[in-house]
Amino acid sequence: MPENVIIVGSGPAGLTAALYTARANLEPLVVEGAAPYGQLMLTTEVENFPGFPEGILGPELMEKIRTQAGRFGGKFITSDATRVDLSNRPFRVEVGDAVYESNALIVSTGAKARTLGIPGERELLGRGVSSCATCDGFFFRGKEIAIVGGGDSAVEEALFLTRFGSKVTLIHRRDSLRASKIMQERALAHEKMAFVWNTTVGEVLGDTTVTGLLLRNVETGETSELATDALFVAIGHVPNTTLFQGQLDLDDAGYIRVAHPRTNTSVEGVFACGDVVDHIFRQAITAAGTGCAAAIDVERYLETLGH
Picture 1 (tube, rainbow, N blue to C red):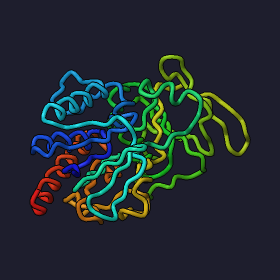
Picture 2: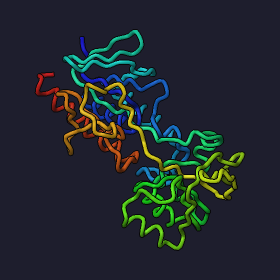
Picture 3: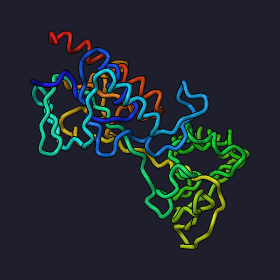
Picture 4: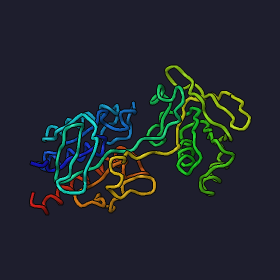
């Protein structure tokens, strides 16, 4: 007997979808992954999720939503989906050797921030290293901040960080920005902004918090140190859509296309939500909102099938 709905992914979008489908008595099966909860597992303090005036740890917030979904009948598999077949309904989701079938599917596999892959970056993640200015800029009020990148997102985040930091240094491996001209002009004219050109970051320095960066000039090979309290990495995100290539319509960057404001994908009965769809906002609260929308879309879809 196929499941009513399988949800692949367990970040804010997936768990919110689980909560809503569970409360609709659909008994969702959540393939939450071997490392569940998405990018919030990498976040120490979340201060901008409504309802938590004192802030809450990212993993604790996810655990609360998971418990809430489980209370209403959500079921969980703490393993990775290894293959999906969306060519026929019921859809097939393979988890290792086990095969699960479902009349509807919600994809909420999220995205991961591109990393520099340098010493100290992973070790100091959440302790001065971040990939989200909107999430973490507030923690560095009056501090010196560095940011790596050169596109629109990097410049936009750098300008946002000037609201908090005493100085924001943008480090770029080329001698000019790739960002749009108007964004460049704003950044170059900003009194709090500084620029380090033709340079890469070779190491994040610090034991328990970020204290500085080891820099390397790509033209001369010369190395130097930059004292800073934080490093924001803004070199893009990669959506987790490998499982769905060739089965769902993806955009040029690999994100799943949906029929906004609905969550329908190119395959009838398959819905998508969260950061696997959204490359603009990338917030826990917006992901949760689309998870709610996907759940309601699924409930209405299953009604048309007589389930």
